[in-house]
Image 1 (tube, rainbow, N blue to C red):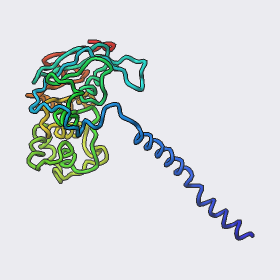
Image 2 (spheres, helix red, strand yellow):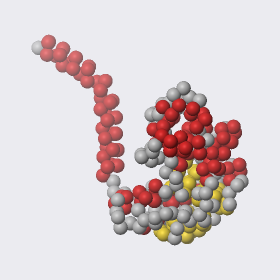
Image 3 (cartoon, rainbow, N blue to C red):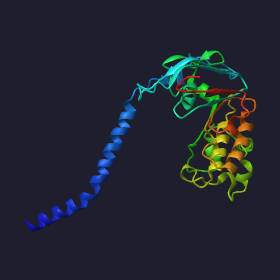
Image 4 (cartoon, helix red, strand yellow):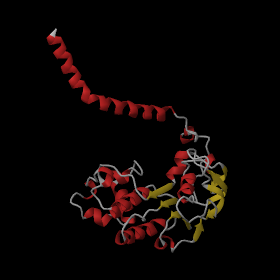
Length: 276
């Protein structure tokens, strides 16, 4: 009947705008289930495995011994090739070199985002593969070029570094990161919402929040991956002062291009084509 055809046409008209969304949802679900079904190479059981060694109090001695590595997605490209260097407890060691030479890769291997194809990475003489993963990462603070921040308050973003923090500890970390003064200058102080990806703050302010978040766990090892390279000269100076203060008394690995970032390092390791 005419009424039936009209009703069917109306239903089709209502359904057409959702077809694109349905397709997007299907693709997103496929990617999500692929991720959930993947089997990680690094054993996730090490997070809670009581048999994985704990060092107790970490000194922070780091050593790379004949380390070679290729990313699983780029098996034909040698990123690190027989790399050996060390950072003694309390030292600042800078990694420098051209893009793609393996600087950031070394940091990822130290924090066990990946495992070396050959050679070993040691902390205090123990292979990182033998350490309890959760405990090891609790001893390491990381500040990257583009910190991951969330649309919640400044205080909560710092607290993501350690869940059991008191407000006094958050303030102390912010002071150490040279962030307390600008935070208190905001109308709502530590209760100020940061916006998506920290969009309500400047680049230098976001970076100092990330430094504070890394410091709240009082890490023995600090990893700085181009932490000030995306900033203007004035912001870089303020952030660099915070980084220098944060590095005091800690073993620090710095990845950088700018001389101002590495001029006070105890050792500079130059990487080229995956070699020291």
